[in-house]
Every structure is written in C-alpha cells, then in structure tokens.
Image (cartoon, rainbow, N blue to C red; front, top):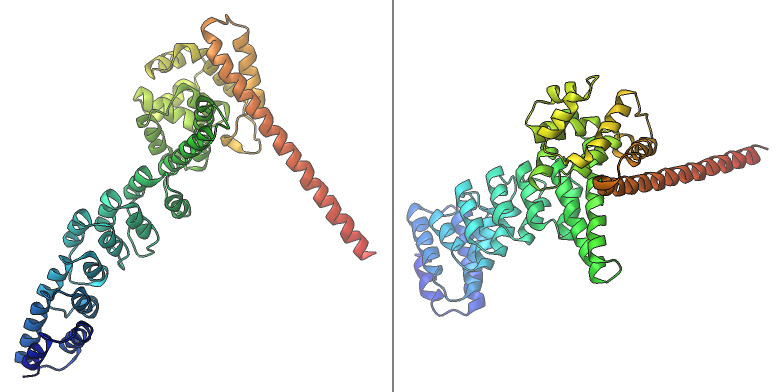
Length: 394
C-alpha cells in the first residue's frame, strides 16, 4: 500500500523531493523489515525510477544502493549503464560484481568509471592489470595510490611504458619498493627523454648533444641498477635493455670498466645465447681465444674488442679494487690503462672507441674529484664539531 501511494505521488512531485524520496525508498528496502510483497513492490518501484528523466533521482538510487550486498542486482546492473556520474559510485562500491564485470567496464568506459574501479577496496590483480593496460592516466594514478590494489609487476611496467613521461605518475612509482630494475630503468629513460626535449626546446643545448647526455645518463642508471640488484635477478634488466635496443657495446664496456662483472657476463650470455656459467668460464680463462670467440658470437663490433680485451686482462690481474660507488661507478685507473693500450694501436677504425674511452675517463675523473671534495668537507665538519665539543668541555 505504501509503495502504491509512493508511485502515485512520485509522478508529479518536484525533482528535489523525488530524489530525496527515492533515496528513502532504497534505504527502506535495504534496512526495513518489509514483507515479501512490499519488498517486491519496492524493487519494482526502483526499477521504474531508473527511467526517471532527472539524473538526481537516479543518482540518489545509486548512492543508497551502491555499497550493499542486498541491493537488487537488476537495479545495480542497470545503474552501471547510466551516465558516468551515476555509474561511478556503483562501480566503486558494489560487492555484486565479479572480476569479469569490472574488467569489461574498465575496457568499455571512460575516465570517471575507470577511476571508480581503480579505487575499489581489495582490487583484484586481474582488474588492476586491465586498468594498467587500457585505463586513462588519471585512473592509473588512482590505481597506484590505492593501497589495497594487487598490482602485478608486469602491470607496473605497462603503466611506466604508457605514462612514465608524466611527473604525477612517476612520483608514486618511484616510491614503490616492488618496482623491478627493468621497470625503474624504463622510468628513468622516460624522464631523460622529457628533460632532453625540454633543454633542446629551450635551446640550452643542441638537440643531438642533449640526447647523448640523456642516453649516457640512462647507461649510468642501468649499471647502478644492475649493481644494486641480486645477481640472480639481473637477467630481466639485461633482457629489457636488449629488447629496447639499449644493450650496446658502449653500455657493456661501461659495466666492465665499472667493475660490474656480473652485468658484463649476463650481457654476453644474453647476446650469445649461452649459459652464464659457460660465459664466465671463457672470460676468466687464461687465454683469449675463447674470449674472442665469445665476443664474435655476441655480435659486438670488432672495433671495440681491443678495449674489452685489455679490460678483461686487467680484471684477471685483480685490477678492480673497492672504490666509493662500488660496481656502479667507472674506475679511472682501469679506463686509463685501457685507453693507453688502445691509443698505442693503429688509430683508424678505433677512433670512435678512443672518443668513448676519453668520455669515460673524463666522467670518472670528475666523479673522483667530487667524491674527494665531499670527503674533505666532511672531514672539516668533523674537525669543527670536535673543536666545539672540546671548547664546551673546557
């Protein structure tokens, strides 16, 4: 009887009153002790209200029913096909959806609905992967900021590939502890590209020079990431570098001249399609025939072999010593040794290699000077602190 009176009244009621009454009807359905007939009538009334021309009425229905597991499924699913501002709260809260519903909605809907799905509590891995693959930048940001979302590593990588050039996306990604080395490198590469375009656009640097600086910065980061990554987990980074065209002879030589033997061996194993154990045996063997064969099988430029040969020889002689920065920083003495040996050969086709080694030597010298000056500053601070302590004691 009450529902029948409601239906008669609602046809001509003002919009605001209709919306308020619709919310009250939905809450009564959920929380009042209605008879079976009254509950069926209330559900029928709500289905009728889905056709109300005023969005406020349908939004009131969505707000009241969205979070309840007792909401009528027919009404919930109908609301998901409504305007985004009406469907969004339902997608954000309703427990009636299965993963397939949410994946399909993420693929077919706009930003508002994608954001609502991305912010759901206990977001399943499959749905998070769908948002990462097809979602807007805004929805991916909501996903990254959702502490309850189960985001698989490959989806984090996909977000970086799609939106790593956006600062708002980079910030929460860099704060994550579960970001793989390959994904971090892609993120840094995106940032380097943005900075290179910026300085070139401002005409602060020539565009070619800016791109070279960005590329060298990415190489330094790759070596640093490899140095920080457990030995058994370096291969995914190497594979990413190869697939993206960044596993060059210059990068591999940088790794070796930094004392990062693990990255050097993993890179040659990847390029030559050999086991790391076999590659390591050839590198550390007493002769150079095996090294040359490995070098050729890896497809590295023949003109770079002299530098690799000299660096490997120095390594076998114990040429790598512990230095600040460890296996992530170029070692100056090693570079100078290799450079001297290469310069004594015919210059000809070694010219590009000599140029690269000179850049490495300059970089190593500047880094060494910076660390030396930092050390002096810290020593002065320690001495000043000790003097102050003695003065106070006196």
